[in-house]
Length: 92
Image (cartoon, rainbow, N blue to C red; front, side, top):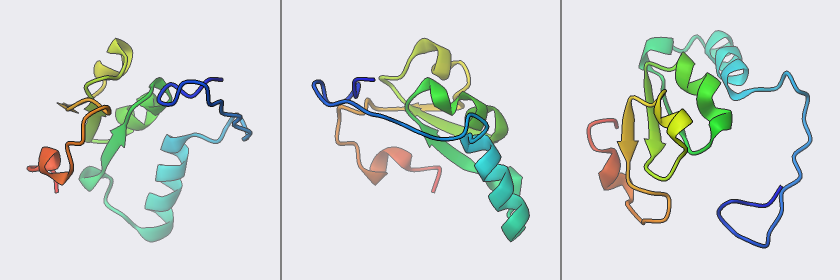
């Protein structure tokens, strides 16, 4: 598929269809005894929805789809802006 951020560049992603971000997070939480209630995730595409459903706090950039925004607890500036860490104040 064409890279949505760099037109003219294309991605080829190969992975098991069961390999998802939320499953990886759950594996890490179990492996390292992390507290799920302290989890904050950041996403910019619809493939982040399952991860957003898992986390108590989910941050999306403003330029994401309406569908992903439904699951975000916070929206920060567009991925086309250089917002830096200052846009994450209150989260870190």
